Length: 114
Image (cartoon, rainbow, N blue to C red; front, side, top):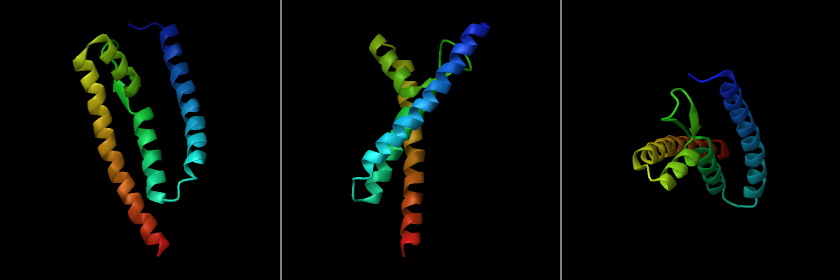
């Protein structure tokens, strides 16, 4: 059982992570505006979202979700291939979903542009 202090720390972590992501995404999006092709800009933004926001459930504590890049990298360094594989699988599934969303956005952009 996880105590209240750990739950509070978990909530604070996700709140800070979300705020940090929004600031980082805004700054990088401003940088991506220099790219002339809409599809490339949105592809890079989609890759950033997938990389930084894809979660994986912790094997240590049930019900706790951790950023997949952080969990997978940490477990890969420690040598736990199964846990790292779960994180990579989550990243792969999120990538496939985001590619579908990106393609639909390109279709929407093309139809609106006409």
